Image (cartoon, rainbow, N blue to C red; front, side, top):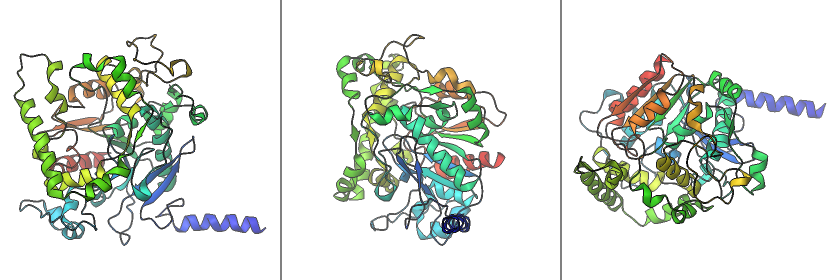
Length: 449
């Protein structure tokens, strides 16, 4: 009888605290924890401006960050311990920003996608992949052989399930770059043997199920991609495509920038950080602009590196992204992007499976390459999809991704995408034109759902 009373009490407690959710991190504002099938804790943050605000009751939006970034990229703000940010709204800022008390308190919130969607009534959730994040929001480390397949097949489903369990609603899922990639692979119904992975000897093959894909598409309201990643355009591929380079890229290691960057950034004034970024990517952008059209695309090194349009980003926001957003990554993830760019195919890591554990170079793509090919199963995506693409083709090519994602998925009348002028892959989320162009376009599409 005592056990029954305790269970009933716990149930009622969860019901009473439905707004904050049973399973939330104790004492940490907005923190939720999702458990993957291989027993890794994935950290999520449910957004509200302050504890005095209520969480929204609208459609949940779940966003994962890009590789080398963490969930902080979705909520630009002035860190309370850094009093050197004094950003002022421009005179022509839209009324919604000028009239919002939160933005009046911290003008840098103007560049927070999470805050904008909150103002439009959406329940915004952001999440960190395994090995990624800072402080209380750092997800558990995975094994050092973690790659993009592990992030997408195990971490992403755990986060989706947590959001659905807490809210009882179908979420819109997506993210920036790799976050968007994992969302559309999730909708393909991919999975992985978590028991084999946890043993640590090798990463098992990716598998998928049309039945699971259909179930996931039924349980999701839509897909939202912010320059969603796929097959990148590279330069000098023949230099990369060698045993030496791939053996290095395939090293099993977590580059824990979340542990390094706070100490490094604390030594640098924001002017130095932003000035360095401006100088480096300003030069890269200028050289990319003057690349001779008569030369082959593979020779355009600066075009391939032109993924940050600093002309489109406020200096304070640049500093924030470096100081708060730059994050940890596994080398295995970069290895996959290199394979995809060189071989022009979207597939699982070439070392997945016991038989491939010691393979050095990825094989030429084909039906007999032993890999699960993501691009062959895009038609399983049936939910409405929307994407914001950057004008620069560095890292993500609008043309390639529209062909792969939008022309590959099952057509939905609410599918749509836009390309934002004067943008690069990094600034597509927080650039100067994001609050006035990208954010309203995203919210308007969500409203149509």
